[in-house]
Image (cartoon, rainbow, N blue to C red):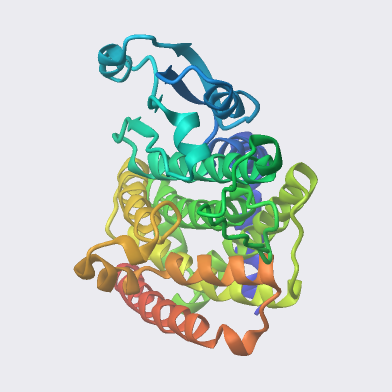
Length: 374
């Protein structure tokens, strides 16, 4: 144990001797959380919209006026010529065009259903779909107001039927995307820091020749490997603690579940990232190679984890491929503990999957690393 302790001391001295490493450990996570937490969002706001009112009645004006008092839409103009609307979308001056047809007010009073036309820029299909749901909600509000004005219109509107629903969202009542995104950023930070530090730290030993010096000492291979990975494990836990503190201070998002369970699951995940880092170091001769290979791995890990795109929306072949991605399981575990307070017995499938992957990749990495030491 004393030999391992000496190696750990040496690793910490070597890590903190570089001032840039302090920035990587404490400043970079803060910047990532602030920028990514505010930049990555699925909320759709400030959608530019142009209007064409072919009816020009009080009801049509009231209907269009509703789009000016919401943060979701920004009116950019009123087009009198219906045939000129495609140009607004073609040149990007508006993303949605709303056309109120003739006899809009007359049809409502008669009990008919007027057909409002929407021209939508569908390049970003997700944003277009969300914007359409906002439009539907505004139309329902207008319909409810019209029904409430039935006595003033002097005509019965019994043919109009309005379904009233009451929706309650658990765990995220305000439906803010940052509540879902920010805990995922904590997982990305832990992945990036541990993989990069482990792979580049060991490769740096190769470049400067100190690894060969350690190989001729009485230190055994398993002691050297353990002494190498323990400092990065400690730094990984320090990193997630700092990231959790930043998340709470900046966004007010705290851990709903057990913090001890969160650290336990993080330890299982760190086992996989350390194994990946060691494996990368065994196939790299320079820090530049380790950086490239690590970045190549993380791009696929992030894209196939469900962080940006739901796994259920991916092709079937890609969905099967995601089972080999430990970040997929850790994201589920992290969000469940962070937002719902889920206990361990409901997270057993993800935990066992991370353990199996971690033991497998770590075992292969250690075997390959021991060959190098021999």
